[in-house]
Length: 301
Ligand code: AMP
Ligand code: FES
Ligand code: ZN
Picture 1: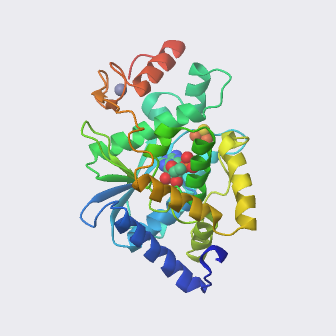
Picture 2: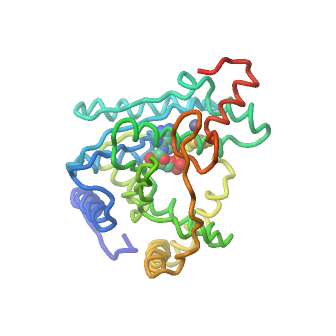
C-alpha cells in the first residue's frame, strides 16, 4: 500500500482492515456494541465485506437487500441476491431482510422511472426509493444506525463533484456520519469511508467473499465514474492523494470551514405514509408511487 508505505501478508492485511474499520467506527462515533445496526447490502464487494467486518468486530448487525428489479442486458438484481445468499450460507447466524420493490410497491425501478421520468436514467428514482426503504426498515425494526458500503473512492468522487460545482450545502453535510433527526430519520454511517476500493477488493478476495463484479447497467457514462477515472490518474502519479483530499476536507469541516452553510431542513411527517420528509404534505416517495399508479391504472396498495 504505497499510500500508507506499508506492506502486509494476506492474513495480517485482513486483520488490519478489521482493526482500521473498528478504529474509524469509534473515532467518528458511528455506533456502539449495544446498538443495532442495519447494513444495506447490494451484493457488491464493499457491502458484503462490511457485513463480514462488522460481524467479526462483534457488532449487532443485520442485513437489508432491496430488490430493484434491474434486468437490463444482465440479470443484475437476481445475480446480486444470489451472491448475498451464498455469503449467508457460510454465515448462518446472520439474518437478512429482503424488500422486493415490484412485489411491495407494484413496479420495478426501471418501470417506475419509465412511467414518471420518461427518457431519463432511473438512477435518481432508484436513489430516492433506496433511501426511503432503508430508513423505513431501520425505523420499523428499531435499528440505531444504517451502514452502507461507501468506500474512499466513492466519497472522494462525490467530494470532487461537490467542490467542482461549489455545492456548499452538500459539502457541509458530507462525512462519515449523518446524524439521526427527531422525526424519524435514522443515523447513516459509512465505516469504510477511509478505505480504498482496491483494499476492500483485496479483503473480499482473501476472505473468499464472492460478489457481483458488474456495475449497475445504468451507471455507464455516470459523472462520478468519470471523476473516478481522473482521480485514479492523480492517485497513480501521487499515491495518497485521495486519502489526503478526504482527510483534509474532514479537518476543514471540523474546523468550521463550512459551518452555517447548511440550510436548516424542517422535517414533517408525510401525510400519507408517516415517514419523515422535507416536503409539506406527501413525501416524494408517496408522490412517485401515486404517479405510477395513475399511469398504470392500479389501485392504491
Ligand atoms: P451504490 O450507490 O450502488 O454505489 O451503493 C452504495 C451503497 O448502498 C452500497 O455499498 C450498499 O451499502 C447500498 N446499496 C446499494 N444498492 C443496494 C441494494 N439494492 N440493497 C441494499 N443496499 C444497497
Ligand atoms: Fe439504481 Fe443503478 S439505477 S443501482
Ligand atoms: Zn410518504
